[in-house]
Amino acid sequence: MGLAKRIIPCLDVDNGRVVKGVRFVEIRDAGDPVEIARRYDEQGADEITFLDITASSDNRDTMVHVVEAIAGQVFIPLTVGGGIRQVEDVRRMLNAGADKVAINTAAIHNPDLIKETADHFGAQCIVIAIDAKCVDDQAGRWQLFTHGGRKETGIDAIEWAVKMAEYGAGEVLLTSMDRDGTRDGFDLALTQQVCDAVPIPVIASGGVGNLDHLVDGILQGHADAVLAASIFHFGEFTVGQAKEHMANAGIEVRL
Amino acid sequence: MTTVAVLDYGMGNLHSVCKALEHVSSKARVILTSDADALLKADKIVVPGQGAIAGCVQALSAQGLGQALMQCLENKPYLGICLGLQALYDSSEEGGGVDCLAVLPGRVRHFSGKMADAGEGVRLKIPHMGWNQVRQTREHPLWHDIPQDARFYFVHSYYADSADNKNVAGLTQYGIEFTSVAARDNIFAVQFHPEKSQRYGLQLLENFIHWNGEA
Image (cartoon, rainbow over all chains, first blue to last red; front, top):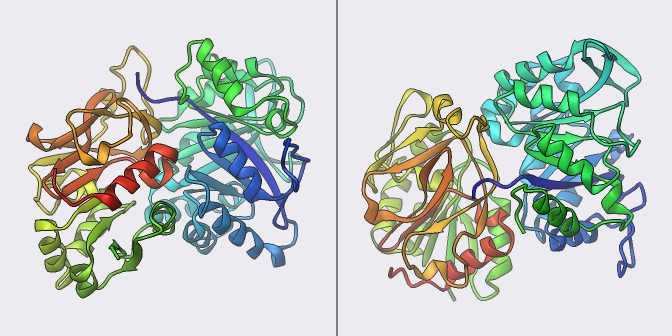
C-alpha cells in the first residue's frame, strides 16, 4: 500500500503530428496526438510524455495547440519536452495545460535555467532530461551527450543529475543513448546509480523491448517510473498488460 | 445555473482545473476570476495552486480578495486543491515559516530526509510524486462513487499535519501518514490533483458540483 510505480508512454511529435508510427486498432488517423493520448489514457497510462522533435522553430507554436487540445480531454499528468530554451517557453507550455516541462540541452548551456524556472513555477513542474552514454564500461562512467548522442559534453551524468536536483529540478528523465531504440532493455547500471544518487524521482528511459524490461527498471534500476515508446506504439502490448505484468512481479501499480 | 468560481491569483496552471470542471459539469458555469465581487456572487469556490506557499497566502489575503475569500469560507462550498488545502492551516514550514489563513488548526510540514530514510531501508523521493491511495476516514458527499483506497495523483514536498482529527476526511501513507483530505462543514480540501487523477478525480469534481455544502 502506497505510492505506485508509474508507466509513461512517450510520443514524438513533429509539427503537430505523432511520428514513429503509432498503430492502434480502431484508430482511423494514427498520427493524431489527441486521439493517441486518449487511447493511452483509457489503457491506464499514469502520465504521458510528449517530445517535440520539430526542427523548425517557426512550427513550435503548433505544439502549444497540441498540448491545449490534449489537456482539454485527457485528465492525467502531461509532460512536454523538446525545444524548451527559456523561462518563456516553460510558461507557454504550462499555460497550455502541461503539468511538467522537460529541459535538456538548454540546461547544459545554462544550468541556472533550472534554478530560474524551478523558483518561478515550482520544482514539481521542472524535469531535467538527461541523455547519457557510457564512456567507460569497466569503471561504469557515463557522460552527457547532445544532438541525439553525437556531441560529447564531457559532463559526468551522475554528477549532473545530483547538481540539477540541487538546482531545483523536481524529477529526472534519464535516457540511455546506448540503449535508446535497441529494445535490449534499460541500462540498469546507469539507472541504478542515478536513482540512488538523487533525492528526487527518476524516470528510466531508453531500450524497452519487452515487459520484463519494465520490471527490471524498477526492481534492479530502482526507478520510480518507466517510460517506453515502441512497445506501446505498435500495439504489441497495452499499458494495461504492462501494469498487470509489473503487478505480478510484486510491483505496486495503479490498476 | 450554478456558477463555480476558480480563483486565479496569478500562480500555476489553472487551465487544467477549469477544463476538468467543464468536462464534468455541462450545467455549471465555470469562471476563472481574481475579482472579489465575482467570488461573492459565485455559488461555489475552487482554490487551486502550485508553487510557493508564501506567494499563495499573500495573494489570498490581499485586501479585498482576502476578505471576500474569508466570507466565502464561512458558508459556500469550497474546494481547495494542493496549496488550496495547505493555505487553510495555521502555518507552513516552507521558506523558513509562513503564517497561513488559520481556518483549520494544524501545521504544514516538509517531508524530512530523516523520515524519508525510515521506510524499510528504501529512500523515499521528494517531491512525493505520483499515484497514491487515499483512505477515507469518514463518509462525505464528495466520496460518492469513489472506492476506499482509490488512487489520486499527488505532487508535493509539504504535507498537512492536522491538529484536529475531526477535520480529516482522508489519509495517505508516504513514510508517515498525512492528511491528504481535510473537511469541515462547507470546506473540502485535497492535497492531490483531482483534475489530473483520471476517473476518480473527475468523479470527485462532479460530486463537488452537486454538493450543497453540507457534510
